[in-house]
Image (cartoon, rainbow, N blue to C red; front, side):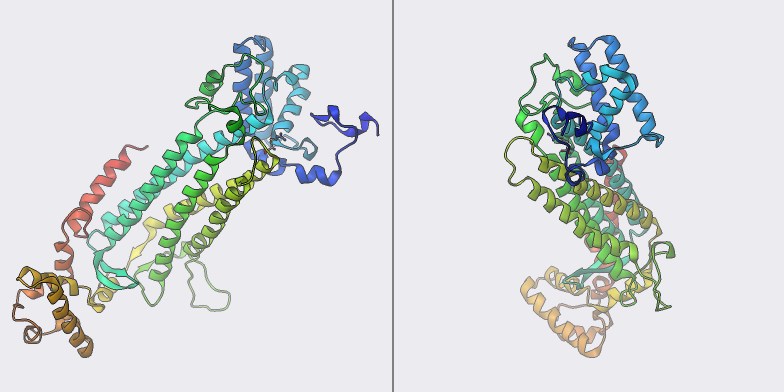
Length: 466
Ligand code: ARG
């Protein structure tokens, strides 16, 4: 086969036959990596500017390259760009288009660079920007939770352990628990961002380059905090993507647990809250149904994000240094997990203010499960009984209440007095739900005053962010 038949590959020089058409499709990534176009162009402009600074490109060449790349950017944004599978990936599509547009000067862009440091740069720029987007969404969700917590700072509900009624808490306190989880998620993303925010540009294929490059300069043009240190590591490292995936899995774990609660709470059996119709769907057969599809889907999508984390870990586990084509497989899981987490956060941000608490139902549910039994024990301890003995006394009282189908507060003073002479008529103060809540009045406790204090701290924390 003549050299003319081999197709317009940018790397075609040493090849004597055209790529097999299946292999061409099989090895191409342009269908999915084209979404990196913005970062690819940004990275190329920084690289060309650096080459100009060190005297490898003239001012005029740099200007032509910049103008050419800006034009390509506009074309892509306007939908006037034809992607070619034959050109394999986003990088070679854009480079080929540049040469087509500005002629031979375009062929100089790849001086002192490889697609290996180029793609590593693109992904880092993309991930950095997506982390910023996720952090903003997490913050929005935290704000929505704080608002909801404030609205429901005194609304009593049963707190559960083992999904059995444990002690009264407030709905606001419960919402602030979700706030705390998201606060850790935010911190994890910020921490991950530090390791994302380094420039691999200049590592070239794997060993660096023979040109007198200025890696600090290209790093600064891209607002990286600095260059990466080892060229082999620079082109092969995807830890930062795995870190983001791991942080995302935890975000999804939190949203999934939250979703599970929303699903339970909207059920006829719990009936604690109402989710407005716009967040629910109906059944094609059962006319009465209003299904909490949004939380269910978020819960379901958690599996997908966890799967992507495992994909990325597995992708990397056996790769020898430095770059291997395996790495091309990092993109689809990474893109999908970011899209998924973003969408789930967006859904939650919208859903939070719409939650309507059914305070009466929550109160009735709290009355049912002897939620103030610990308060009665604590009451006896304060009157001098050792806690273990108090536990026993209250256990006996609960057994009677179960038998009589009453709450502890509904037992008469004589009945309660049978179990301990220490019980006086002030006992009813601690058996009420409000008394129980108000008594847990310390940092982190469920007393409405403490919930309000936590809200105030949260608001100050959030005010520093955006
Ligand atoms: N499309 C490739 C990727 O996503 C770009 C780097 C290709 N490098 C190479 N030496 N073949 O990883």
